[in-house]
Image (spheres, helix red, strand yellow):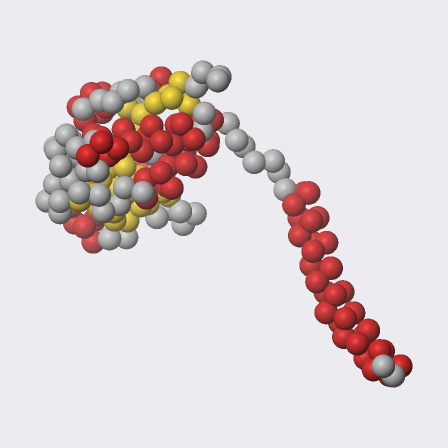
Length: 187
């Protein structure tokens, strides 16, 4: 190869490599200056709710259906399965299966601006949906086992059904009590 060709290749490599290395350096610097992620079991539990909940979308509704045994669910078993799965992934144990009335008896009311993953929206007839994700804009995503639709369905707080039905019959937002989650025993 002639020298001018080598110089051209060297210049091209530098044109490509220098910006790439500079951006890599900025990424490394940003990673070092970020505050540590809070990874308490309670925070992890909330973080695992969305991915745990999403696996049930579209599952058939059957009253008394148990997802692992029957591949179907009702609202009580849906919430139990989501809470149990997220708790397990976070190193916690969810207390126990409870029919909806007992589950609601083990919650406490919260303000709308305090809603987080895993909280429940409850209607005046005790129908409930789980808030499975709250995005940074404040939009909430809900999941519940709909007897009318015959499956586990989702909607968000921008949906007309949320405004026309859920807010029309709104009783409140609720969070499970702290004693519903316990540390898992070490193995």
